[in-house]
Amino acid sequence: MSRTPRPASPAYLSVAVAATRPSRARAVKRPCVPRSRTVRIGDNIFINADAVKGAIRHLPDNSVDLIITDPPYGINGDQLHAHYNRDEHFVVGQYIEVPAARYKAFSREWIAQAERVLRPGGQLYVVSGYTHLHHVLNALRQTSLREINHIIWKYNFGVYTSTKFVSSHYHVLYYAKPGGKRTFNLQSRFSTTEKHAAGGSANYRDREDVWIINREYKRGQQKNKNELPRALLQKMLQYSSREADVVCDFFMGSCSTAAVAIGLNRRFIGFELSKPTFDRFVPQIKQVVPGELLASISSPTPHAIENCGKPWTESEVQSLLSRSRALPAEGLRKRDILTALCAEFQRGPFAIQKVLKQRASAIAQQRRGAA
Image (cartoon, rainbow, N blue to C red):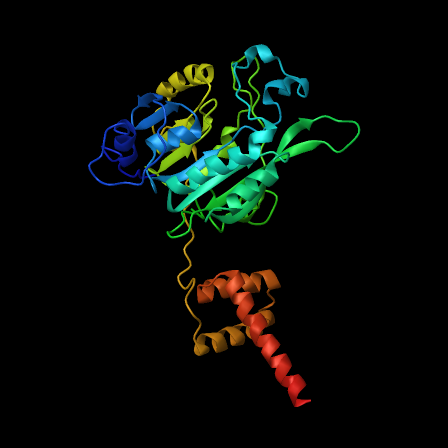
């Protein structure tokens, strides 16, 4: 896989380093915020600060390609061990929760900053539980960001209960900033012609909006309170970013997003308010080699359809109708007929079926009118 050249002086890196320097140019006046601790590892920046204050100080408008973040859920996260069978001795301390009474304002504040720093066409994935989902959705709807998908992430071993159904999913809210081209790498994981082991299209199955991805369990290892599995993060990054893109996490935690982003040769900037968490996990990023994950991921050969998106001419439509009537006489099944028509006319199956259905409907209407 060819790699995109990494710019020598990333724009966001220069801005972050020089954030406290006075500017000669006139700019929109922003609130004064306290200094924060910054660690640079290669082209990547890690900031021990509140996400909103850190974004105001370190991130200019329209500077980020992709945000993936998992904000505190506002459900007494420091007491989650009461619901999970987990040894808290291995969980890094000082998980900073957001009081439920402040969650509405908290969501509006950080999401407003996310909207500001995303470039036109930039994208946002927010992982959320259901308790304060309405606050997150309301905050998103008060911005210019547009909903692309509401994804359900189903995981193994939810919270056990004997009086109601087991909760074993999170919400992944996928939004984009209008005004620019959105990155969506359709065939980054599976080509559109690749078959799934269980039958059907592997590409289609991978892009359904219910993702079944198990949690990662790290027995006897230090961990953050609520870590996202790397398979989940890698899927978002592969579909919604390119090499050398700037990826941001407003609530870094154990730096999982950073590790996967850098491993896929993206650049990273993120914020973490908890000092013990920051001190424990940021140094581990020094062990991540930029681009080290690229060799381990599949590189499907994209399936190109020559006439995809092109308008049909009347002669092509007539030829398609003629061939669709002739092929059944050759003993082909419906599925094989569609495959043959796709290959012959260099169109996708949906385009072929759409034209055939439209013409069949038109013919039926003419017959009813004649009667």
